[in-house]
Length: 181
Image 1 (cartoon, rainbow, N blue to C red):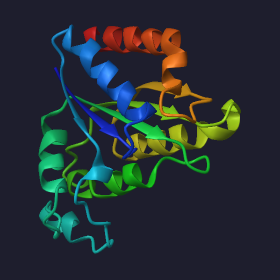
Image 2 (image 1 turned 90 degrees about the horizontal axis):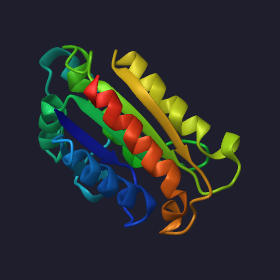
Image 3 (image 1 turned 30 degrees about the vertical axis):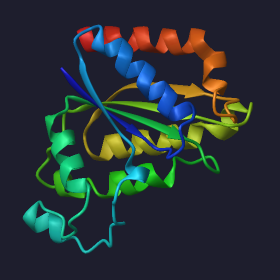
């Protein structure tokens, strides 16, 4: 089983800390995980030229070439995004847009996905719902199977995710069980 964790924050904060914890715990189950942080890579924004619909290859030569290879090799994608204005991060959105070369040949179809949103406010309905909905819509359009949706709120400072350890451990156990099925 191979898993790719896509982290939507460039900071060494809650999203990256959570991704490392997930990777560490899944490794114990012999699940190979790679973590990428698109915001720290050279990735151009999609221009919507649609050339990749015909060729299956993007016209840009950037870090998405290796990212697409990692997506192709992965059984499950875990999207971890901080919320910004009740939306997913721009880095995750750009990453999703650039997966278009995989859409027409249906190379995303059937892959599993997990959506994790980390909000800075205590208002659950305000901070994370929109980000989860965006990831859910992406997965539905790509015909991926969204097997988990998780929200963590009140995580403004770099280490606030650590105050949610019970929730984090519960989520990780659920993810482990989903991978076993």
